[in-house]
Image (cartoon, rainbow, N blue to C red; front, side, top):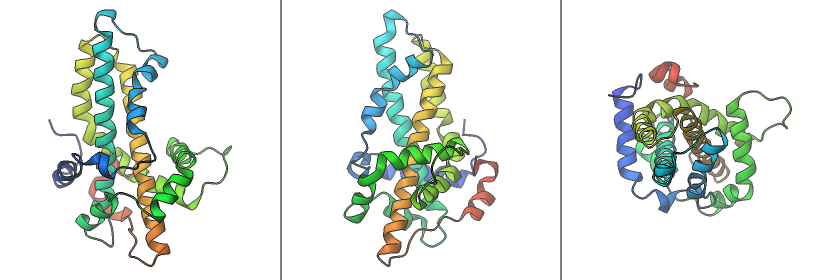
Length: 231
């Protein structure tokens, strides 16, 4: 079954992006963020939100959950970048995706490394909704959150089928559905927020160096994706 509401052309574009960049993910992903450590902690996260394991299958279930979290993270990150590239107003989708899936270097790497943890937390807060108790976000965080928010509904829809199948296997190993859904949704949120930061820093550096910066066509995205945009 195809993920609901996502146009076939968009699904095909994201699938092509995954086929091209998924196998080499670790060579171009942000070295400053330990995504495997995040995924390794997912079984413990699940326990903190109420997951209990059947003793006979606990080891297998935890290993399968960590593997599923890795798939969700990698799939969410690549899909988010692919969607941002597909709806760029200036560059072709292929050129925009190549830009975003290139290993950060020089000024980009420095910008990402300097405040990554702080920026990521700020983007996640903005994605969670308005919160007047936090300080004014930086321009980078605002751009990242806007891009992340624009694609997250579609990313979730694209991942739904695969994660549902993985959850069925985990339930068969004795896990409970609700904690699984919470932690895997959290993993995807982190992936999408990081993709937004990758996008924002690329824009920032290209503007500073006189290049042709990426520019997300939000109107075109909303026209193509409907309620999934800004979901």
